[in-house]
Length: 172
Image (cartoon, rainbow, N blue to C red; front, top):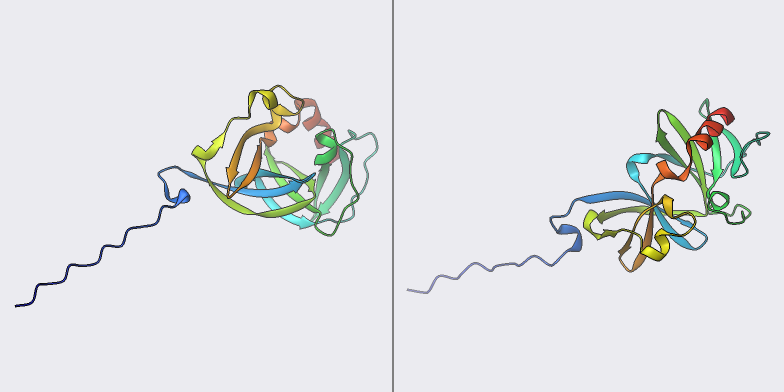
């Protein structure tokens, strides 16, 4: 009588995304050559650059407002908000429409939107001490290295002060 064949055991490949860690879905975008990320739940939509109507006496980082299907939305140039010089909009320039809470919706001008990434939560590290003490560090929620890309995670609720949010609300 022939010996019965044993079933072949297939071992799963190691997968960094298949660990027990929770995954975060993030919209990644480029700004001054670096990659940044926002939680996908904060992003309402992504639109192509459009005509922005300037608003008198708005903060310097506010480019103006847009009419998005009947809703007036203030638009912020993230380069200016982070203390950098603004650049002329290119073919890849986009406006990421985000919700800040309390029904506050704003548009963020970014150089390009990359993709939606699924990143394990346990791979997001706090910013290094040198970065944590620098200007703008209060906006940084964490830093991750995903698929050989360094990604800076932004906390949108800390990008604007209470007074700036009030000014943005008056702009819309």
